[in-house]
Length: 444
Image (cartoon, rainbow, N blue to C red; front, side, top):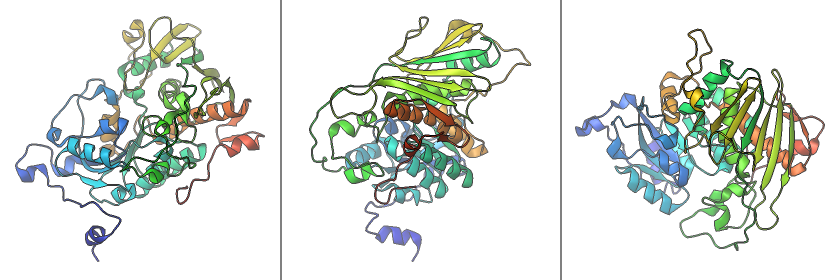
């Protein structure tokens, strides 16, 4: 039986499939099919919705969306949304209406990965699904743009790196601050020695929510809740730990440190050139929720100590904000010649000190790659096969900071970390928290 016939007659493929007709065949203006990147979208609520490419915009040279990490440059590659997947029927229908045309629609992401017309996937699912979806996409021969944080465990992150390498896939993780202008300006300033030796990077953020006792309930009609939970530990459905609220549950999200920490500390790792290593000690303290259903830290202070050269990275919620630039979160870089601030680092953009923006590096100074925008960089790399600015190894190292911070916080003790072996020295209990068994069929 031909593959197309098998899919159309399979009970699992409950949504009809449609052929994608090239724009030129319809007499429309736009790139040639060979120049077009066909995108499949997995998880299209919230953040995932922002990556959809409406059919009406296909072929147009639109300004980069600053919410996706662009800096006002124009897109370097044409992309088209040809397939959509979500476990929420309402969100799937809304996304199809927004895209227009005739996108293929799926409820099971594995069916989308089987679709040979899809070149690359954009994963906007909740955090606990990122690892398995990325690994299976690499195995299916798809390039991957996956939202941050890259993973929920150290074991997952290393498996994602191995999959990207083994299957020669381009993987970009959505910590888009690296692709924003102010972060690049700060990187040029610091890497060219304007602050001298960096001694400390102090990140600040506001606290996580404390308590909530919303009762459990039956899942709404059209939501496949069993699939939503997937590899995570089973919890009864609750509106306050699913769509838009899962961040405060360790099994699903992991708190502010694994959310915004994946932005602020991504910029720090990049500026400090630590994309292939990690700290040697992690010292954590803080307060858990006093009441309610959430289990991520309300207040936290995590000190990461690096070597060669040595410096300390601190994640503090709440911490002391910059005195120079007003923002809800960011980082201050302290060197022996002064300090500068880099704020935010997510869809809200970045900012840095005026004198940093004005700095011009000498012709023979250190060069830092300047991304055209985060999604633009990903699309470019699909064609060049180069590694993007937030490649999988870099994303794993940033996610490791977030994960180790939570582990140290849960155990309330200092961790001696080996960034090569990726193990905690002499602490079996801590090492058990670096992986999870998975639920049902969903495991590495």
